[in-house]
Image (cartoon, rainbow, N blue to C red; front, side, top):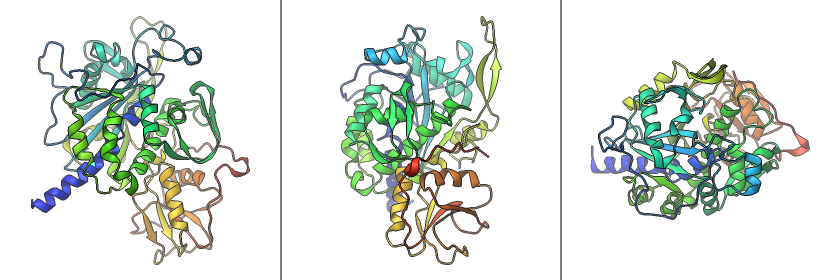
Length: 463
């Protein structure tokens, strides 16, 4: 490999880090459910060793290999540090059984060979075998928290399930999440409908807006919105991935890239991490950012199916999620450094997250309209890597703006339509075009204001 090619490859991998490292605190903090501990000052060393207590080797953890790194991201359900108002609404640790459990378990893999970052979410009710403890929901593997070996136990559980070795862990609290969002100057998001959830202190009006730390936290924590009834926790994972994609899109804007190196330390200031994860190494890589397609970050969730089990000592069955056999294809791809399968982009009883919907903008001589539409899609958390494409020669006939999609992608098109209301949908013949869902931007089109006319949420049925 030539020096130039090697430098270019390294640059692409380093750029992917903005989607998985510079936003790691956002990712974990956003996904933490009812988590809070006291704020940590920035440090140059980690706060915990990611090794067994007796110092012996463990196959579940160890250093990165060939620059491929797996980061374990965690958030717990501890109520410690909540205000009296929040404790009245969310309950105290005593109400919750007095134990730490992780409602957020995510593995982020950075692989220079694939020039990709992969974000893999583990549903908290996944029924798995926890080393030394037997079968239980995966969120119980974090019991005891960071100070009592929780991260190592989670890593051992994930290793047993996936065969993947975990190289580093990071943990952040609610306060840290809000601090990072506010450090970024807020996160821009488009919300298609008014959303309220008193349980997560969420009250947002429809529209494109800048969410501050508390608003953003409410959006990614809620699981009680009108269309969440079928699978509330899985719907929440979809919104969390959408939020992170919006953050990535924002941070990849040229004016934000130059700020990236300076963001690393404030981001990590809110995290507990293992001793070997150094700020200097992350700052060096993030500092090499030179533009990146949002498509370089892929999102997956462990495919699962609902079931009932009766654990020992229980008098009745409880609801759990069993890993679907198709999850094995994701684990193999991550172990082997091969392309990811399509599985895991959708969760059962849950519409596809915008984060997993690539959308092209077909410019039919629209002037600046195509750019406006691309901005809305980017801010809404869609994968905008297909970009803006000239409409000519597509073979599609239109007489106005239109959302077009190929067979098998109607559900994704309906998700897009929530953010571009009033636009006709049309299935078109599959062609050699590099898109499956696209918006045709025509002259004179102006996207409708989100929420205009008191529009209500449309509960989209997944395929």
